[in-house]
Image (tube, rainbow, N blue to C red; front, side):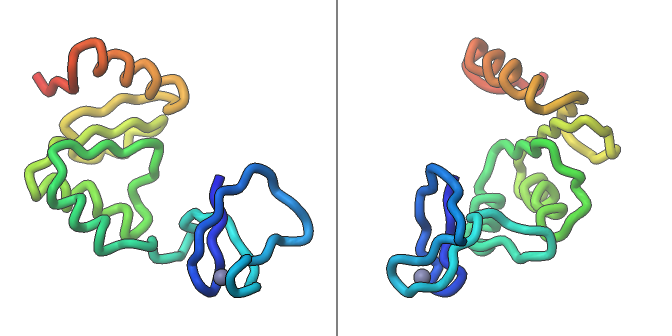
Amino acid sequence: MQAICTECGTIYDVTKIDRPVPKCGKCGNILRPNVVWFGEKPRGLEKIYKLLTNSSIFISIGTSGIVYPASEFYLIAKESGAKTIFLNIEDFHIDADQYFPGEVAVLLPHLVDKWIEHGGISFN
Ligand SMILES: [Zn+2]
């Protein structure tokens, strides 16, 4: 529920989608959804890599695991010592410490409740 300016990068909270395409209040260029579209380089990649190398747990939620650079995130985290958890409807035979097959919208709330109930994530 955010939009980002295509020119200056200002981020806006969005409560509804209007037409014509909304424009930036600072520079006047058009806004777009603040997401990473297929083929784009994620914004803040340097920060992402820093977080990956300092994480103790990496959770992949509903991804194919084949689109670069996101596909290498779990490897960077794992090589830096993080435990890895994958939730996906498809088992793409990735080398994760834990794999939960199924629909993420169903799995995730159940897992989060379980993790809260047990005071964290167990890898035993
Ligand atoms: Zn702007």
